[in-house]
Amino acid sequence: TFGPWMLGAFKALAKLRFLRGGLLDPFARTAERKSERALIAEYEETMGEVLAGLGHDNHALAVEIAGLPEHIRGYGHVKERHLAAAEARRAELLETWRHPATPKAAAE
Figure 1 (cartoon, rainbow, N blue to C red):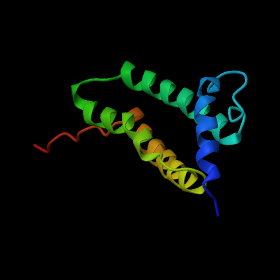
Figure 2: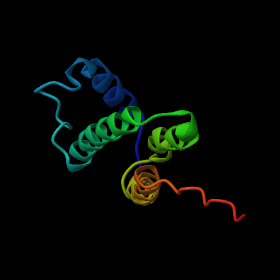
Figure 3: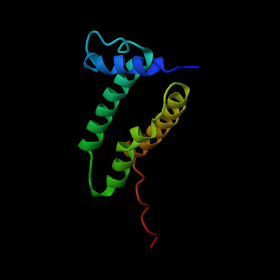
């Protein structure tokens, strides 16, 4: 268990906040942080594709694609589970985006 000494440790970590994102960030090179940076780049690429083809007819689908990162929450194995689900949903949505269903002509 953690004792009262943890409050001092948290205060020390808070004072080192200025290191975040820099060369001296001790957590910047973890697999999880590398994965997060890759996700950001992937999201930007996806949104570039979506914005290039955005129209009135596909706006709702674009909003759903743009909202996918909201479902990636948690840490460790929880985040991995949410990430896997979001990636599967992303693949489905992008397939729909790239190959929209064409309406069938009415029979005469």
